[in-house]
Length: 63
Image 1 (cartoon, one colour):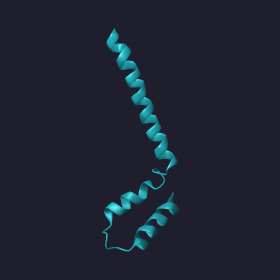
Image 2 (cartoon, rainbow, N blue to C red):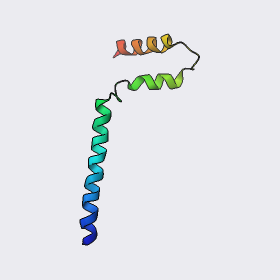
Image 3 (cartoon, rainbow, N blue to C red):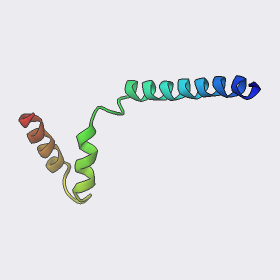
């Protein structure tokens, strides 16, 4: 029984830390450009950034 008195507050604290980290990531814009990272992974680094932005714009027009 004494183990529950220790484990429950620890679990609640870890949950609050996770929630705080998630809210921080929302406020700092971590989820603003979800498709951009996927395009950067597919295209070579030598390609111009114009190509990536054109693909992003075309994708936005279709949505």
